Image 1: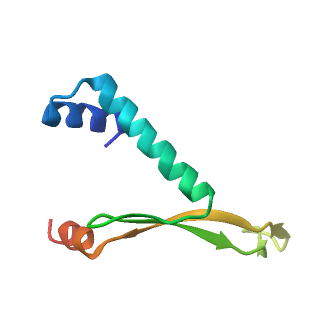
Image 2: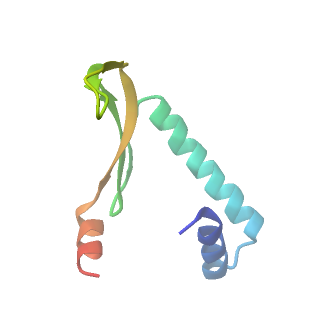
Length: 92
């Protein structure tokens, strides 16, 4: 599902104007992004959590060669689904 499809579905289910739904969704995504940027977890009970994770610096080999490349330390995001969401997906 793409963002535009989600906006359309929410609009149909709630009867709210598409512009309000889009603005609300954009604000929500911006808030999640800002929290993750500040290295804070974002949790939705019954859905899951977005957790910032630190990836340590390391050396890796380039496939097909013996050349090593240093990868700098960086942060990423991991999604941890809730037990409820896991159960729904497994049983569908």
